[in-house]
Image (cartoon, rainbow, N blue to C red; front, side, top):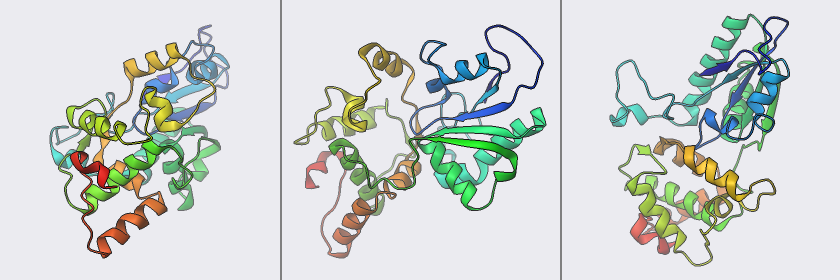
Length: 261
């Protein structure tokens, strides 16, 4: 975790309420800091009197240490957002709470909303929070409309069911991920010229310089199990793959056979 205890004016003291910012999938805490100070939420909050804490999910550049495992060990990556909701998020909130002796505000984006909702649904953490702001909240992925996003979801669900995937770490900048992406981008109807738009759809607030800066620092790795678990949150995709299995069809979706979908 990182902390911004004061704003740019350097004024200490006062009742600085703590706020925890939690990023989404395939990014890290840097995503809250990439724009100008007047446009980056972490800096805006710090300049307006908040004690800002920035979380980094396990596996990202600032959160790769472990008491006994190396990030090269498959066991290091044996987790999904279940573990993030049950263990990591409570640990981060406990740390902020103990260091500030206050209830905190929570801001989550994408996966950061999913793990919060999962924890809240079991009655966890609620007594330690003053508020929660959920940006692009996620419970299911069935509203995902982009061709590339849907194909990627099919890839992850299909590979885990057909027991083909041997990669424990999913690194979007790694060689294997690049091969898969190239295959996905060659699929009819998929235009990867603007990769972010291809995944997320049109965005009103991104320009060329913003995208260039984002790609300099992001995306970040996560576990393959996490990507599989997220893909299973799109019921229509999961159901279609299961139906193929039950019908005895060949649904091997490894990168060189992606067109079978």
